[in-house]
Amino acid sequence: AFFIYLSLYLSTYLFFSSSLSFSRYAIYFIAMVDAATKKTLAAIPLLKTKAGPRDKEEWPQRLKEEVTSLIKYIQNNKEADNDWLRIQSNKDGTRWFGKCWYVQDYKKYEFELEFDIPVTYPMTAPEIAIPSLDGKTAKMYRGGKICLTEHFKPLWSRNAPKFGVAHALALGVSWCGYLIRMCCHGYIAMVIPSV
Image (cartoon, rainbow, N blue to C red; front, side, top):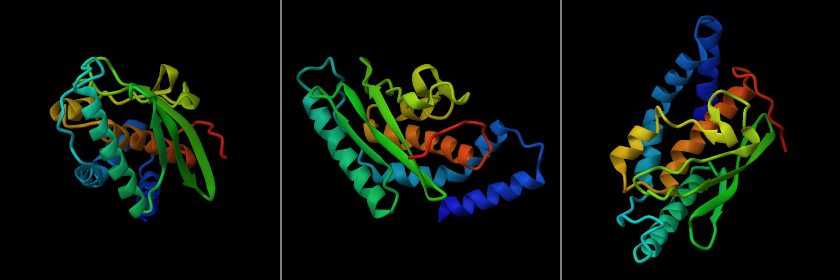
């Protein structure tokens, strides 16, 4: 319901303000959903172990915390009727992959998602990639990596090492979902296949 209201509000706003550029529109959107994002992040358990893939002794404990917070995040999404993600990792927990989707006008847009845990994790955030969106918009980097520098990196650095994979997904893939919504509404020129 929130996104329907937001879409109607923004489309009306765009109709009456034709000089509004995409970047201003993006900033306006981020300001509006800031409270919702904070609420989502607050519901995800924070992690306690400061360990990365190179820390052979503490990494398994960190990985358990990651899985626990991911399970809670996905449960919260299902309870809020906002189920949009399936994810799994390799045996070592250093490579993650899965699917995310968005439904618009009774069409399901489904995307493969992947990322590697950086060597300096958790102090460095993972770079989430949706390869099928590579080159489709200016907000996607080479390989389909989601542009997170301006909005996401400062927040991650303030909250490291308490943030984990679930927090990265909540922030990163949600931003990508925003881009997909803008494409579906025609505000960004990007061709995305429906399933």
